[in-house]
Image 1 (tube, helix red, strand yellow):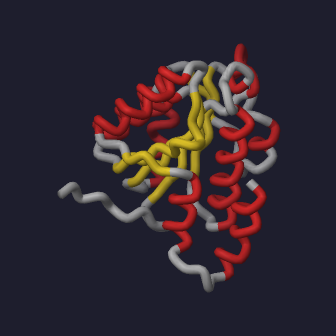
Image 2: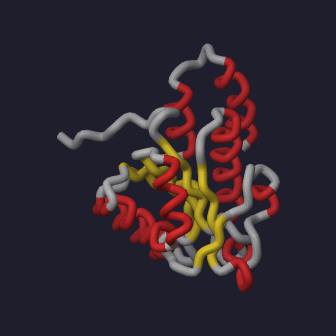
Length: 185
């Protein structure tokens, strides 16, 4: 039996990958992807959890979606490498936060999300990929990206799975604050 660690508020970091308007414009179900990432980011903010957001070549592809940018505590880190971990500044930021479990979401599943996940696994992180918060231009690329991540050891999860696992209980103030967000998304 595989030892799958429990995700807790003390051990995770969210990585929101390249949620830029120009990339999202060509991805099916992009509204759902933005909505699920919005939910995750709002939950992270309410639970005071660390996260990093990235952009891919911002000069050419633009900034993070306005819906998400308005919720971010700090500006997304720009990269030219496909893997977030291949960028020295992002790798250093992740290392300085020091959380062993990374939760990935964003675009595209088979490129930046995949390469980031593979590199994090190689570095010893427990990686989860939020299946309803990632996407690609084609269904095949999306499906095979998720399959390859899972084969490499990443856990497929959903936004609600992660949020409820972090909340742990229904009788907390955090649950009462987050429940309307879940119902609204």
